[in-house]
Picture 1: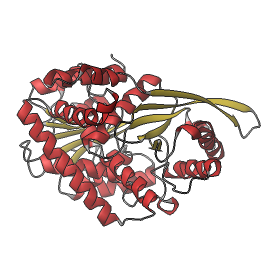
Picture 2: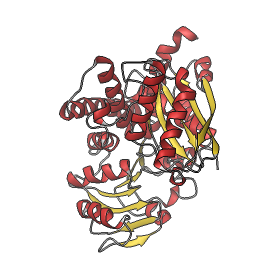
Picture 3: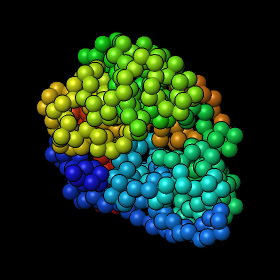
Picture 4: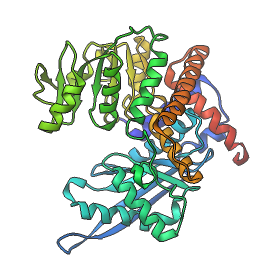
Length: 409
């Protein structure tokens, strides 16, 4: 199977076959502008010294500072991070916010560290990376296994090192540390605004039967919002497996069950199924909200949905895209569907720079306007170019980045 970065480059190639771009511009986008690797020495709780590998990929900053999450994961590799940074550059262009694309993190299993060790690691990342980030240079945010608390530690360390007074170098902070109202549900809510805008255009019923892969922050918030808006969630998965309840899951009850039991398995009235089974359930909408490369050429012919909405990054491979397109299954691509998170992160950055704090109603209104407008523009572009929504989204993003890259070409 192709690695995530190869998949991203294949997506780029597919889009440029629909619309021609300056070859020099496309060549610029085939590699990141910078890859930074650092060593982070940490004194562990037992007194031993351990050195962790940290990294940051700064992909493209034509439209503004590099923007993207920091993930803590034991299996993260450079190809994954390069792909995520590339997608972030396009994602920011799709929703027309003044940011470029970046991604980073540390190779670590955070479950093996104490809270104190995680704080040392987080502050250590900033100590080694401080001269390469900043409110006008690179603005990191939370990602897999990083939290608002970790962002607060990082922001605090950056201020200690640089004396920066804006508090705008890190987003996804707790509200009391300068974070934005509405950041928690932003990715799921942004996805809902896109889905609600395109639902009737894609010939879906008012009340859809929905399957969600992933019940973390993104998948969990999407489940809550869709359930509150009258849609029927029939299956949900976590790392350890999935549950199916064909007459619909009461998401409020499931949230309470998980609080008590720590997992969704065993939820009353449901039966356990595998993640593989979940992906091929018959439904109106399939929402991958977990990891990359979940829908591939191996299972794409077995998918029984009318719409795939990608709340995860890179869940569908290019080969699977072609199969789904040929079968008449629409895909709302990640660079549109899950862009609500980075949009509200950019609102946080803007609030910090201006010394303002916006209320949640205003944040959600601004988010809705952006997601609805860009969803409609991409839908119309797909129709005019007679292509799928992903290629249309890529083309829109490339047009906007190319406009800013003209000075460098």
